[in-house]
Image 1: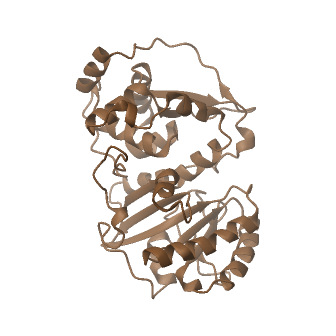
Image 2: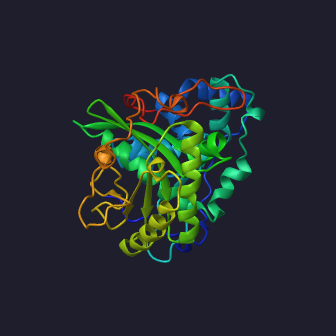
Amino acid sequence: MVSNPTPQRQLRAHRPERPVARVLNTAEHHAWLARHLTDRDRWLCRMLFEHHVLTSTQIIDIAFAGRRGANLRLRNLYQWGVLHRFQPHRDRGSHPMHYVLDTAGAVAIAREDGIDPKELGYSREREIGRAFSLQLAHTVGCNGLFTTLIRRARQPGAAGALAAWWSAARCGRHWGDIVTPDGYGRWREAGRDVEWFIEFDFGTEQLSRLAGKLARYERLAEVTGITTPVLVWLPSARREVNARSAMAEALRGLDRPARVPVATSSGEAAADPLDMAAPRWRRLDESGTAGRVALAGLPALWPGLRAPAPGGGQRPAAATPAATRAEVAPPSPMPPPNPAPPWR
C-alpha cells in the first residue's frame, strides 16, 4: 500500500551514506556495461531520464517482482555508475532510497539512440542536486500517481495498462508556450483509451493560480483542436472543496468551458491516496456528493468528448516518436519482461 506522499517540509536534507566502492567512468567500463545491462536496466535508465527521480518503492512497483531482487540489482547499478542514489533525512523513521540517472546510464541511452552524449542534455550535477531541490516532494508525489498505475497494470489478470506517461519537462517542450501540465497520461482498458493532463497540487500553490491555469488549457484546446480532460489531485478533502470553488468560478469565466473538462480528487478520496484508477474522480460542475468514477470511467462524465484513437491517432504527439538529436523518445510506460535470474 502506498502511503500519502510526503510534503516537502519533511524532506530536510539527504542522509549521508556509507562509502561504497564504485567503478571508474571509462570507455572500457561503458563497453563492459553494454554486455551486462539488461533490457529492464536500460528501460529504467530511460524512465529516470524522463521522470528525473524515483524511489526504491516506486521502482519495485514498476519493474521488479520483489524487494530483495530489486535491492540487489539497484545496488549493482549504483556501483556501476548507472544510477545515483540518496536518502532524504526524516526525524522519525526513514524515507526510501531515491534514485536518479548517473553518467554511465546517460551514456548508455545516448549510444543506443546514436546521440553524442554531450548533446543529450544530461548534467550529473543537476541530477545529484535533485536531493536538495524544493520540488523533490512534488516530483516524487506526482510520479507516484503513474507508478501506481503501472503497478496495477502488472498484476495478473489486470484489466488495463498505462499506454503513455509524459513528464512535466516533456509537456513543457511541446506545449509550454501555452501551459505546462505536471504530466500527461493515457490509460487503455477494454479496448478504449482515456487520456488526461494531471495537475498535482500539494497545497503550496495559491488556488487563484491553480484556477488561472484553466484559461490556458482552453487556449491549448483551441490551438491543437483536441479537448483533453484535466485531472486535479489535491492533498485533502478540504483543499479539494476550496479548489473546486475557485476553479468553478474560473470555468464560468471561460468563453468555451466545454473545452476544459475538469475532474478532481484528493488523497482522502480512496484507500490508496495515489491510486488514480480507483473510483475517486469527480466532475468539476457536479454539485452533489455522489458521482466519483474510476479512471476508465472518465468518458461517462463527458459523454460528448471524443475518445482518443488507440495508439495516439488523435494526438500524434502521444505516440512514441523516434529519437532525434534534440529529443530522446519517451520510454514505454510498461516495463520489458523481467530477465531470468541470476542477474549479473
